[in-house]
Structure formats: structure tokens, C-alpha cells
Length: 351
Image 1: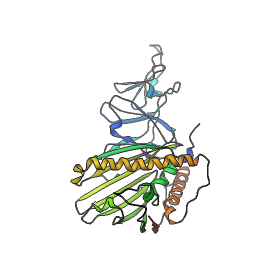
Image 2: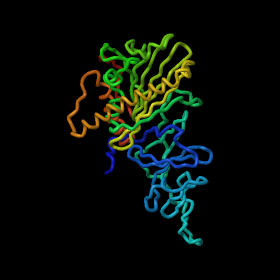
Image 3: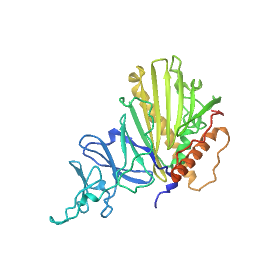
Image 4: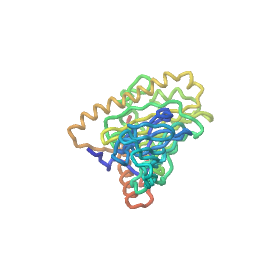
């Protein structure tokens, strides 16, 4: 069954994977926002992304061979360059006059920044490639630096349910209960101010909650700013004193109409990071595992197609997401600039 295209935003960048997943000389197939794409690296190490179908009979190019910057289909041996241009059709007679270079596979814009690989999904493919209408997301980190850790899981839910789970403040206490983070027995009224960003909204910089043990180990004037932007990117930037920072980014990449990949990437300038590396990795795995566990339970509940609701200020961010998504899609359909509808607002909830 074809994926529900209304779920997926177009004319936007999606995280494909960490650069370590893309090996030289190997093809990697991945479905993103319902589109099947084959990724690889050319001889210079630069990533490329093509529609994962041979234009002849539709066989996935990822099922073929890749050598000397040439993808060869496993069905009839058609050859394509990493730019998607056909280079050879073996079955054609030597004296054939056909210009095979006119046959092209759609080429997706792709960029690699700080060892993360991003692909641009357009709404139309009238030509064999497109020019992106916007830049890849700001990852906060200097492009010359690399993230220290990357962890990914696939959630059994669509992108909308996944995003709401990501930006929902009320679940943290109950899903992520632990002695080193916080307890459901220590609920506290929170009041946070939000401001719009170009493609979403941010919880403006503030002192971290004092009922979260994970923050209490950070000394020296700690503050944090949390930003969410479509299609599903959450950035937390923690300043520790005047010199150090922690960058924690969680990104949701829709795969199909029933599955979404959650990727967490992390960076820190704190000297203690190298001494606490393994405990930090275990902590990251545990957090992601807790999210996966509750989403497995959610998927069972959604099988009966229940009526759902969004209630009060704790769910305001979820309502913002739906409105931003609706207006982004309308702007693409009308070919007009997107205008963020969010206004500055203070929200209160207990967690």
C-alpha cells in the first residue's frame, strides 16, 4: 500500500543517517518520507542520493553493483553515474545512435555536515534534479566539528505521533523515571516562555529544572534553550559557565506511514565527558529505550483507531506543530513563502 503522502512534508531536509553508515564503495538503500532512495559516496567521498529505481524496468539500483563511480542495474546491466546520468545500455548494438545520456535517474540534493547526512525531499520531480528552497537545519555545532555520539531506533508510529511524543513535556516524568533523572513523586509546576523560530518555536534560555538530577551535576551558571522545528528536529543547547556547552539533538525521520526513525546526536566540550563517556552512552541508550518501549505500547493502542485529544497548556506545543505543518504544506501548494503562525507565549504545566 502506498504511504499516506499527507503525513510527509516536502521541500524540506530530512536526516538520512550518520556519515559512518555510508561506506565507500557500498550502496545503502533507505526509505524516507515514503520515497525509496539509494545513497552512496563517490570517489572523492562526497555523498550522493538517487531514486532507487532503474528507469528501464524499475528494479532497485541498490540491488545492483557499484564500482568506479558507476551504479549498474542487476536486471539488464544499465549503468548510471553518481549524478544519475545513464552511461551505458549493454544490450544496445555498437552502432546504435541513441544518446543514452538523455536517460536520467532523479538525483536528490544531499549534504554532509558534522558527519550527519541530510537529503532534500521535493514536492515535484519535473526535472532530474532540483534546487533546494532552503538550507539544512542549523545544528548549532561548528561544521568543522563532529558529534561525539549517535544512537538510532525505529519507532512503530507515524511522524505525527512521534513528534507529539518528542515535544510533549508531560511524559518525561513517567516514561523517563530513574534515580539519576527525576521521579513521578516530585512533580513541580513549570512556567516556560516560548518564541517563534523560522520553522518552529523555542523554549527561551532558562535555568534547568531543579528537580532533574541530570542537570544538577552541571555547575557554573548553567542555562538551556530548547528548540523544535519541522519536520521533527529538537535541539537542546546547554551552556555551562562561560566556556563550555552541551548540544543534544533528537531528530525524527519519517520512513513509512507507520514507522519513524529517532536519532539522537550529542556533543560536549566538558572535560569530564571523556571520563564519563561510557556512562553517558548507557544513559542515552536507556532514554531512547524508554521512548521505544512506550511507543510499542502506543502502537498496540492505536490498532483500535481510538478517538484522541489534546488538552490544555501541556499539549499546546502539539497543537502548534499541527498548525505549522498545515501552513507549511499550504505554502508549498501555493508556492508562497511560509509564515510561522506562532506568537510569543508563556506556558505552564506540572511535571
